[in-house]
Length: 336
Image (tube, rainbow, N blue to C red; front, side, top):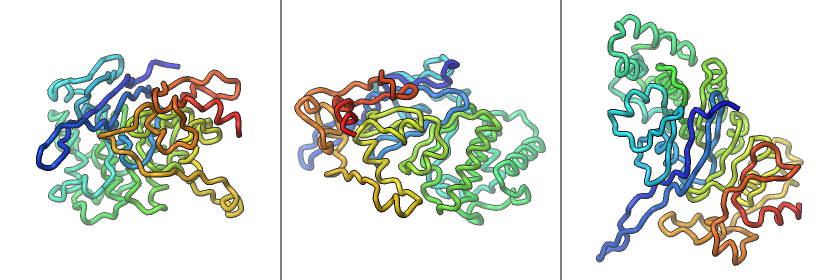
C-alpha cells in the first residue's frame, strides 16, 4: 500500500474547564485522548460513535483548527502539528471541510456564486473574474446545481441544495482531503442518499480522501472503506468496513451495530439487540482503565485498572488490519 496522505499519531485534544460555583477549580476535559490512524489516497475512513465521543473535535484537530495538546498530524510526510495560521494557509487549499448544518454554514448576505468562489479568490487572487465565474458555474454543474442559480441567495434553496453549495465550496480548489462533519444528519432520508452518492462520485472522479464523521452506521456502511469507532475520545475498534460490520470484536461496536435497523421485517424482529446500560460518562472525569468499562457487560478488575492498548488481531478469522482495544475481546468472541 502507498504511503498515507494523512497520518495521525497519538493525538490528544484537552480543554481546561472551570468546575464548581463559589470556589472555581480547573479540570481537564479530554475530548480526544490518544487517537492514531492513517488515511490513504482515494480512501474513506469513517469515524463513528455516540454524541460527545470526540468525533467533530478530532476532525477539526486534524485540520489544525484546534490546538493539539499532544501527538502529531503528518500531512504528506510533513509534520504540521502546531503550525501557525500563516504557515497553514497554503495547505488549506488541499484540506477542506463540509459542515453539519448546510444553511448555517453559508453567509446569508452572499450569493451562492460568491460563496463558492470565496476559497478560490482567497487562495488564487490572480485569477481573472471571468475565469472564476466560469469555474464556479462548472462546479455548480458537477454537484447538481443549475448554473443559472449563481446569483441567488442561500435562503432560496432547500437543505439538500444548501449542502450541495457547501460541497461545491469545498471542492472548488480541488482538495486532496475533505473532512465531512456529519454532512447529512440534518437532511431528509431521501436527500441523504443523494448527497452520499454525490460524495462517492466526486471521490471516484477526483481521487478524494474523505474523513467521514457520523453517528449513523447505516449511512457509514455505504460510503466507507474503513471504520473507526470512538468512545470518550478513545479508539475502540478500527477495521475494514466488511470486517467490522460482519464480525465486530469490541462490545461497544457490537452494541452500535445491533441498533442499526434491518430492512427485512422478519430479521429485524428476531435479531439480537444489545442495550448499553447507563449514560456516557463525562469526559471531564472519565472512568479509570478502560473508558467503556462502566457500561460493559464483561468488565472486570483488569478493565478497571489497565487501559487496553489498540491491538492488531493476529487470528486466521481476522481480515485485514483489524485493531481492537479490549482486554476481553478473545474471551467475548469465543462465546459467539
